[in-house]
Amino acid sequence: MNDLRTDASLRLEARIAGGLYLIVIVTAGFAEAFARGKVIVSGDAAATAANILAHETFYRLGGAADMLNLACDIAVAILLYDLLRPVSKTIALLSSVYKLVGDGVTAVATLEHFAPLVFLSGQTYLNVFSTEQLHAQAMASVRLHSQAYNIAMVFFGFNCLLLGYVVYKSTFLPRLIGVFLSVAGVCYALNSFARFLSPAFAAHLFPYILWPGLLGEWSLALWLTVFGVNIPRWKARAAARPGVTANEWATTR
Image (cartoon, rainbow, N blue to C red; front, side, top):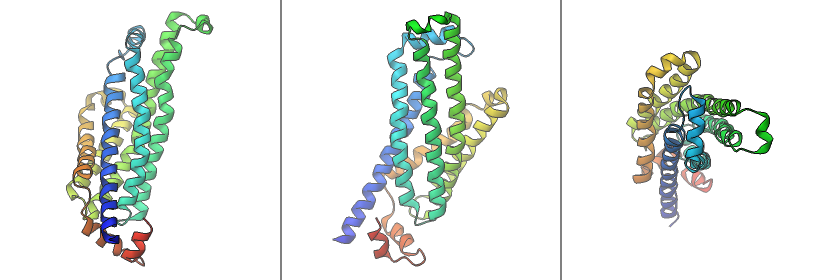
């Protein structure tokens, strides 16, 4: 019965991690591609402000999606660490730390998502600014959010790179997913550094350089949700850790 419960627990943990990862991907895509992407007009502060006000509820949903994304992603970081620590506790931990740091940067960046709603709220204390100045401040907030998002993606890039390594070495998850994730990590980091160093060049890379990232993350999330992990192989890796028996490992869970 103990083994059965352990198997069920491990299977459930993997599927919860995969399900939460799917929520992370969907909410991030909605917030970035739709809630922000559909209202921002590059180089036109007035048009961007008008779009935000015309679709205020939709824009607010984008910020709420970001917060749901972060809540789920923190859980994903912990669950993936627990699932992958039999492979390498150090690298699994480092991967999760990179993810958590990226989440922290994204959380701060979300303030800039909501900032335009303050500048465009029409409150009397804002009367000291002209309409053009308020539009410019709203646009600047949107652009600062974009910069902070790129900073966060550097950490997510290293997270995916290390995550890909431990998945590849795991034997209880498909190696191909590990390859996809490592490629995703490199692409995320390259995209961000390109935006830091040469925005014009980065514009030619986007969105093509991000497709490998989506492939890697979708692959892992779907596999965990549908199939979980290969439990006999997971147990074998856990039992093979130096100085740790299978029963001792199970009691730490």
